[in-house]
Length: 287
Image 1 (cartoon, one colour):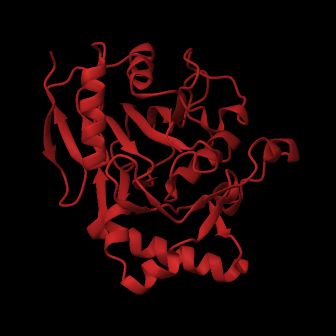
Image 2 (cartoon, rainbow, N blue to C red; image 1 turned 90 degrees about the vertical axis):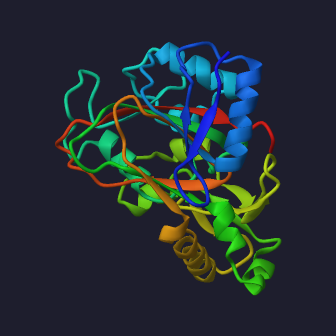
């Protein structure tokens, strides 16, 4: 039996896990322990995990149903044989580094904005699992911001103002902001906007959490400019350094985060340097 040992990485969230080999099958007991740890820490780091695609997807399925994210819109050929595996890389099908103006690379640049995976659909994402394979010498870190701690730190009057408010989320809002306009009306129709409460209660920890980020387009029922200003103010508050853990990747790192409890963003790196990671995602069954 594998034993889960946790070492905190930040004062308010995130922990490194020792004693687990994710190549081994994940039984119901281990899955429940990982879920309990996720409820507490929201981000878990597993070091030195040399997983093939099948092993990563087996672990993903042990935690819940697979979320396909934008794959039904981005119907491109994949380097991966496993359905649901998302390529977070700057290389093409022949493993050649993409040109800076390649539409595939432009799409991925939106990952450098604070966001929650699949907040643009219902059900949204529960967990994301990102495995580092090949990394540049510098840059490309991933930052996580704890939306539970951010909510707790809001003044009482702001918490009161947010109760009952909802924001619409769009799969394409963040990408269009960056000048990515490759999507057809048919693409847009595949993911109509979805409204989520700005304040949600996490089903595991029962803590209140902010649900915002780059996919949030406006506040329902408010004038768009006023709503966007409030969303920007909340994002500025929620991503202060006291709420942020920055992960510096090493090959073999697998990081799991809870999209219902944290926002994340990738950091800049030299796009001429190879960077290959692969992501699988668990759909939220507790909407």
